[in-house]
Amino acid sequence: MSVHKKADGLFEVRWREGGRQKSVRVRSFDVAKKVQHKKLTNRDENRHLDVKKEINYKMSDLIDRYWTHYGSKKASADREKSIVEGIRSELGRKFVREVDGIAVQHWYENLTGKRGLADNTAVRHFNVMHHMMEKASTIWAPETGIDRNPASLIEVRRPDDTRERYLSEEELQRMKTALDERILRKGTKDPNQTNRRMRLIVLIAVSTGMRSAEIHRLRWTDVRYGERLLAVRAKLKKGKERFVPMTSELAEEIRRYPTVIGQDRIFPPKGGPASKRQRLEGSFEDLLERANIHDFWFHDLRHTFASWYMMNGGDLYELAKLMGHANIKMTERYAKLGRAHISKTGNTAKVIWTMMDKNEPVQEEARETANIA
Image (cartoon, rainbow, N blue to C red):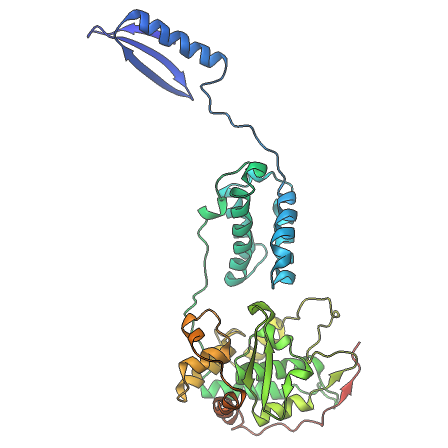
């Protein structure tokens, strides 16, 4: 730190602060010495540094707190539990203040990289992280020591919400043929329970537009044979109940499907009631390969139903009700569709079944009762 007299008669005080050279000019030498003395005093007392007390709040503690106050109370708590535990396994040992934008970016890239998650699944994980860090940087900021959400700095790869892939008539026929090929175990007359299960799940999805989670939660009491309806209880959509049409062909397929003793679900989880819903990725991908269908996801079966519904003269607002689109505010102004009216919309599913059954249908055995451990 030094004082210099300039050519214009002013005195310049120079010092370094925060790694940078700084200076100020004053009119007299006495004032310059006072400034110099003040800067020296501040330096000695470290008052020139904007030092914040570091708060050592662990990410694992933040995760526990978030789960108690928010995660456990969500309708999708089962799924969210696995997400927060995934965050804990990678970042749980860090302090919250150490989880900056770079750390969040690295964690997010690992979701689709090392863990191989699909983009839409990674977005769900990211949304949980963003919500948790938002709480950490606002209402819990005094305890966590951060005042900005590091997840807000990350650009995520969100899937295309406008995807409209659906099966053509020829693809529907090939899919139905592939579904019918492996009802029995190869070289025997014994039913192939894995493929039989997947077959009915696919047929329900394509002829009703139901979501995968909704199908897996179907109970035998949800099948209304007399009204030709399926009751849908969507846990992931605020628990709202709706009804979808059930054709006579689908009703017969469900009637023939074996029950599991002691289970009220049509498709009980193999690991028991407490296990997560069973996924079909492997067997469904094999089905698509055998049917020569490309660029197709299970959720596109839902798009297939909706697309053929509209192409057969369906009403947009009725479709929104059938599909359970609770986020379409426009449909909230309309009264709920009566069951009798909904059952009439089964015409679209009838068209889909007609297209699938242009090939010779496979005759199945009568419905049996199986005791599956």
